[in-house]
Length: 85
Length: 132
Image 1 (cartoon, rainbow over the protein chains, first blue to last red):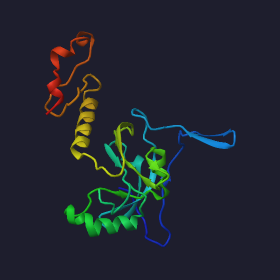
Image 2: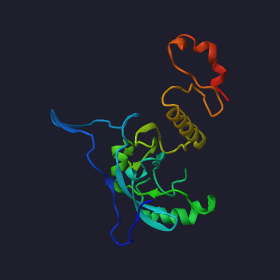
Image 3: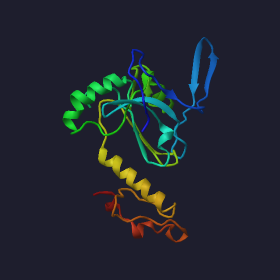
Image 4: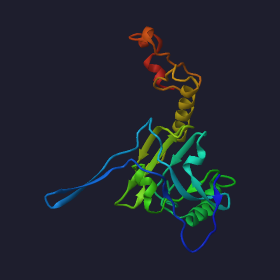
């Protein structure tokens, strides 16, 4: 899945796609600025769409979550490559 | 998906993971520079600059059915992950007519919620069924 991307000096990046429901509110609470971010992940709600560069089987590609509509997806995050666990 | 670049993913897969999994990692290794995606999924640790161990099961409609988040030092349970996928696939197939009690796995009994089952679960489900 996803279209192949060329490897270059600029590190490919991705990120969220479309509007996100997260409301970032900035309030001035005395001298401290308090930022509230509403949690937007809930079971029964849509998974936020995103595009991300990917490596798979010798190829660099660009993957968008919404390409997988119609399939079950397990999305796993982890702290970092080579970090033991 | 981690904050590492696709180049580091390649090095990790080619030099280490492919020695654990013949042929290398069979799925896409995604890069999340700056944790932008992890942040909207609520699992990015700003202080450490990494994504924590968040795992999301997303159904064919793009709807999140389950998630789990672990702090970095402890790894996940793959079998539990598979059990949850099987369970959500089962209830989706039954279009909401059946529910799966604690400890369910394929082959174990499901419940058929309805007026007749109210107050009667104890007759059809025993606590030892929660365990293997």
